[in-house]
Image (cartoon, rainbow, N blue to C red):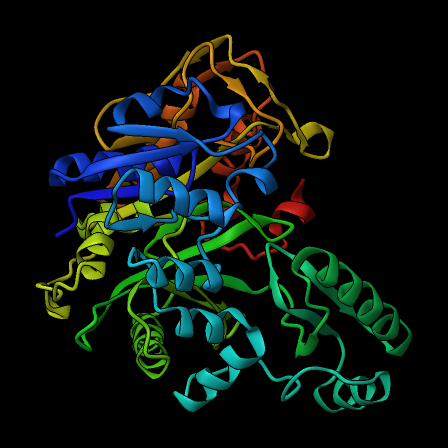
Length: 445
């Protein structure tokens, strides 16, 4: 087992990893930018090093500075968290070439699955349903039009290296397709330095369901059930829950089995999620793999009782998974609400600034993961997430009722947050019945 781990991240996920490491008796080395100097969670690490200015491009994305901090800190492994370098295959390769273990999948598997075209090919090889679309990257407008006519409009143009909704456009006819390809390619080139795009049939009003997996270096692969991530805005998730409401048991089980087949085919190990779209008839289609721990991992932790960060660390250290598939429970219902420093009444404009008041909810079944505190200044340089409110109850109805109560208790002063929108969501009759899709938020509010 590792004695010291560097955490190549910040905020909520850095604190989350520090807590598990402390429980495991592992020392931690934190890194921080000038904007995060003085953050309280840094005091919980054994050492902390400044790696640059506020801009992520000059700090948290600087591989050489993180490796230098790891060498000075004399660590055996690096945990990337989520975001920043978490899915950067080159970073994983550099870590291991420096004899520092990367707590994540092999860089070869990450490269293959990070490219959406090659990920589709792996899925097809594993006999996992994929959305009908092009066999590879689009090479011309003529080719794109022929494929669109074959699979039928509307179609979705997707960047092969995309993520977070960037490099995606929907087209309903030939003219929109031509314009969409140019726009998606240009956006992808700027965001990912890769202009490649491909086509998929656009599934109208789908649900977004993902399967959490764990795989060790000895060929053992487990699924930890599914999470429903349908409640989102512009491809950014707002609410996640497990189990997925109104998903037939047979579909749930087949989806989990499909995820395991894909992960085995990709020679993948460590934690990850296999993501699917589910249509109105409960047909499911593979869309991508997230090769990292996810923001919503506490949902799975609550229903299974497993610490996913601990499992990641143990797998990276070469240990075998000690739990069997039949031993993994799915107890009750867990729901996670992301709370962002954004103004939902003003097109979700970011709301950085000082938190002048912070009252947190509590009680049975309530968990709040956050790095902020009263007096904390939310930076304009990073993601707007300030906390995750997680509820775990025996039934979904009880979990929703508890979430409503918790939302009445929580108070964040000095900045705008998405809490007002959350109250609307959890009091919406369609959401309560589980009859929503990925466009629900835009259509309803």
